[in-house]
Image (cartoon, rainbow over all chains, first blue to last red; front, side, top):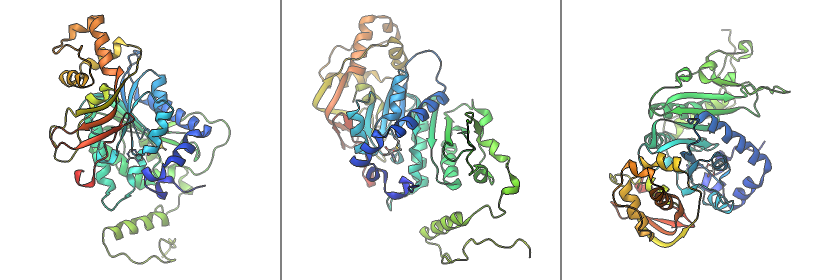
Length: 292
Length: 122
Ligand SMILES: C[S@@+](CC[C@H](N)C(=O)[O-])C[C@H]1O[C@@H](n2cnc3c(N)ncnc32)[C@H](O)[C@@H]1O
C-alpha cells in the first residue's frame, strides 16, 4: 500500500494539477467520497423540513463531497488549500462557492451564520507540520475555534478523518473539545481495516449528543481497532468512542501496548522540541520479558 | 463568488478587529440564473448583514435592493425576487476583496478569492 499522502508533501503540493485530475477521475474515489459525504450529511441531522441550508465543506477539494450537498438542495461554501483541486471543481461546475484558504489559519467567516459543516478526508492534514512555522496544536486550535464561532448555536460539524494513529486521533478530538464542542466519534465498520471510517460528530453549544461524550484518554482505543478483516456482508455498524473503553479480545493484546512506532514518534517529537533523547538503536522499544 | 459568500466572509488577519465587510473591487462580474427558494431566503434573512449586501450589490451594479428592511417584507414576491437576485445570482468573477481595516487585498480569480494569509498575518 502506498504511504499516506499526508507524509509525502504539504497538501497544496501533493494535490497538484496531476494529482487533482487523477483523484477526481477515479470512479472508486468518487464512489467512496460520495458515500462518506452522504453519511456525514446524515450525521449532521439537519431538521427534516426541506429547507435548504447554508453549509461549509472544509477541504472541499474538487467538489466531490459538495456535490452530495448540492444533490440534497443545500447551498455550500467550500474551502481548500489546493488551487489545483479548486480548478477541477470549477471544471466540474461545482455549485458551491469556492475559497482558496488554509483551515489551519482559521476560517474567516462571520460568527453564528453557518447551519452546518462537513469535512471529508481532510482534517488529518492539520496534524503535520509542513513548515517550520507550523505547530499542529495551534493550527488545530485556530481551525476548531473559528469553526465553533461561525456555526449557529446548536449546529453541527461532521468531520470524517483518517488519523494516522491514536495520538493524532486524540490530538484532533482534544482540540475540538477545547474549542467548546460537545460530541464524539462515530465509527462505521469498526472491525474492518479497509472500510473502517471515523466521523467526529460535533455540536456547537448544547450537548444533544450526550451519549457520545468522548473520553479524553483511551488506553485501549488503538488496540480495539481490530486489524483483521471481517469478510462477507457486514452490517453498517457504528460505535461511539466511549464504547472503545471496553477492550475486545483482551487476551490478544500485547502488554506493551505502545509499540515501536509510538516510541519513535514520541522521541522524534521530543527531539523537535530540543530535548536530549537517546539515539535509536535495535533495542529501542524492544519487547521485554515480563518476568524479572 | 456569490454575494451570499461575500456577506459571510471577514478578514482573518491577525490583530484585525473589524474585518467585515470586505470591500469589493470589481474587474468582472457575471450573472447566473438559479431557481428561487423562498424558504432558503427566509432562513438567510436573519443572518445576512443587510447594509453590506446593499453596498456589495451596488458595487456590482445592482441597485434595486431597499436600504431598509424588516421581516414582514419576506411576504412580498417582489422583495424575494430582488433579495434572491442579489444574494445568489450576482457573482464577483475577477477583482479583489479588500480588508476594511488594513487595506490588504485578497485577489479573486475565476470567482475564487485567495484568502491565504502570509505567515506574518497569522
Ligand atoms: C482527500 S481530499 C478530499 C476532498 C473532498 N473533501 C472530497 O471528499 O473529495 C483532501 C483535501 O483536503 C485539502 N486540505 C488539506 N489540508 C488543508 C488545509 N490546511 N486547508 C484547507 N484544505 C486542506 C486538500 O487540498 C485536499 O483537497
